[in-house]
Amino acid sequence: MLRSVRYGANYLHDQADRYPVFLAFGPSLQDVRIIATKIYPSAFVREQYRTPEEIYSRAIQRLAFAPSLRTLYVSTAGFWGRNWRSMDYLSLSLEYAIFYAGFQSLTDISVPDIPLLPYALYRLASISSLNTVNICICSSDYHWDSIPHGARFPTCFALVEHLTIRSDSFDWCIGFLRTFPLQSLRTISIATDDIVLPPLLHTFADTLAASPSAQMGAIVYINLQLGCFSERPLAEAVPIYGGAELASFFPFSSLTQLYISGHCHVLLDNNALEAVSRAWPRLRYLGLEPARCSKDAQIAQGLHPQQPRGTLLGLLPIAERCHELRELSLELDLATAPSSAELRRALSRLAARHSPCPLHTLTIGWSPLGDPVSLASSLSAWFPCLSRIVTARGTEVISEEQWP
Image (tube, rainbow, N blue to C red):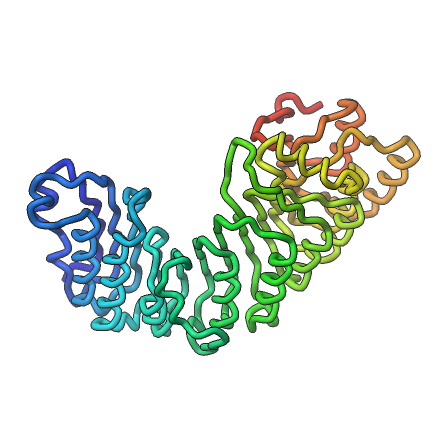
């Protein structure tokens, strides 16, 4: 009658391997979490298995004895750095378990470290009850070459509301959305090592907007991590996204959270900020991260010196229309302060609003602060609840204790 299992084998202790808990998997099991904590097998494991992956592969195979499973989480983070090919054991075992058990009650599956092979993904697609899916794909694996292009499976993943994909190819993620036009999607997160150029970002937004869930206005959360995070400048050119790229996401009118981060640079001018305030009045969190390194930011600005950034006046429409905004992160030009006449007109506009914008955290990128008195006067009027100003490095330049 076992219903829930948490299994984190520690290879430094032989006893954890001699008595594997997965032998207790049975028909009443509903919740399983398998977590790899070490990558160095003990002497006993070396006698029984060739690689650490094999012991976890055996555990996943045993899930075939648990057809009532509802939630499954498998983390093999300890295996990162190993050859992708050695991880095939885990994908094949998952495919085996789904084939024999069916898992028609499974609602949540999270395998963020197991690069799935094509037929394991298709087995997942056959489970009609799935609500939350978190998967990893290595599209450079030769197995994916056998998948026909242009295939569509509109009834698969029909109930999935929350989707997370980690892939080496952003183009593969676009292909996934074309193959499986998700009907119930509400949140989507994509993490890729690809350097994503603006045209490909347009293609992603257009493909996602064509899904049935987007047509119904159901998508409220989009998180894109594009390119590797790095604290040092990378050799590749830094892609720059402007108002035109962000406008491709405007069809998602119900959006409450949008994050674009990674090896990229997002520069919005005042006109783009005005458009954002009109397109997403329900926005709560907007994170348009600038380049991770100041040198990358300088390179990006040098390539496009004429591309302006939003100023304090550009934030005024955000303060007027986004009545649920809590956190805002984008590259700003705070050194350009509004004149006295502009400030008076802005205050008269703000006086007409029904409720103040509840923004409490503002991340300003690499912008110098300019005149602190003018900055404090404007931001206090725009956002009365503001308590923190943070730079691109995460350094807090003004905290609640320092706020005038």
